[in-house]
Length: 35
Image (cartoon, rainbow, N blue to C red; front, side):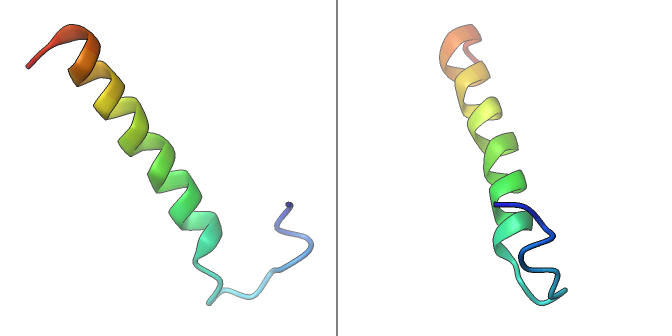
């Protein structure tokens, strides 16, 4: 889905998807490399 489909600034799912990516990356790093 692109931002062109829904450009409402109140739509949070684009930000949530981006933030979720960073969280998943951080969790994978912790799991693979330890603390």
